[in-house]
Image (cartoon, rainbow, N blue to C red; front, side):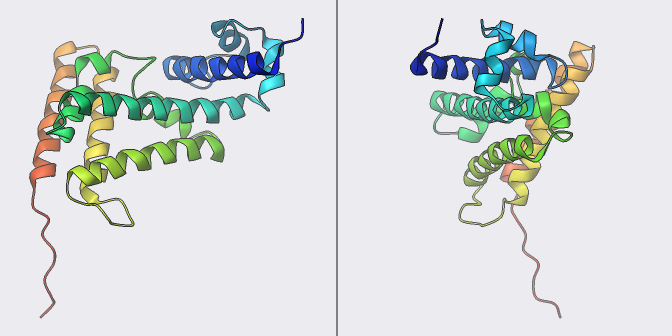
Length: 201
């Protein structure tokens, strides 16, 4: 039976949504097209009518995953608009987020995988990472700069690294300590005064 154009577009969006979650859970190479399409309730044959390749899907799923992550930051901020950095830090460096394999931050779940992918996948991650940095920069007083601020980059690196490490260990206490230590570090970094070098004598 022929699928209408509207239904085909809905199916395509469903595949991207499902892939964005399954890739985060299994990695780009940890799940095949058959299982991806099965997760979307479609046959593997339908894949080639919607995507040029698995890498094409990976790039679009990565973009969707990064968009989803940014929406979650916004939801956290809405809970505590007076302290956006504190709100995002509390959400991101929580044991709940640590346990969210499918729905957690794609940089944590797929960062090392993305480094081995093609330029389209990397471009999807880069766009999302730059959005993270822009938000963080605004919260630590680094707005208007063309390049991301050192503070924003340090905070993002600390947060991502802490969640990666917390997921890597079996010891739940150690896992929690990584997150707690990172939260303290983010607070120190955000409140530290930037010292500009003076003129050379």
